[in-house]
Image (cartoon, rainbow over all chains, first blue to last red; front, side, top):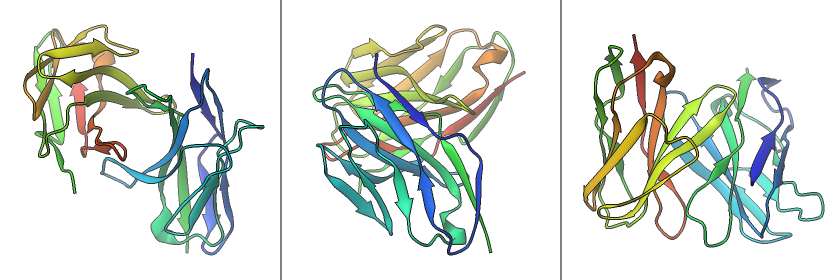
Length: 112
Length: 110
């Protein structure tokens, strides 16, 4: 079945550092890919998405590119802020399917 | 913006109790979902519904049931709560552009 694997956390960085959170997936078809963010005490919010190969999703300075050849969707940000501290989830949804399949989540802490 | 409201942020229940978790959306969306979130496991789908009175099992339905009598309301039921159902429960709806999640209910079963 479909699955998503994220890099192990927690990840701790200093403010203005470069961020990469790795995400790889296994899917039988051609999924859409998502990054969700969960701030403390809140539900999940859609951060960005990509629906086909080579698409780049971007939002709030975060970017991720849909790489079909490496089955990856790594999240990047050039300069992180303390306010980016949260848990980040990579997810996929097969075309025509209703449900999302999530990775295990990566907790990110940014120190001032 | 779509709003998904979960009735309780925190619940503490006793083993064996019947527990109802309520979720209400303020739009006319057909698809609604219940996920469970546990550290190191991410989110796992319990049940989803694609219309009133319609439901489908997700990946971990055991010990749970659901009810959808009205389009805006989707309830998750723990028939006899057990300690291994202590978790964060998240409701979501799916408009065309992506999923919208509620703030979650953190359930502790003692």
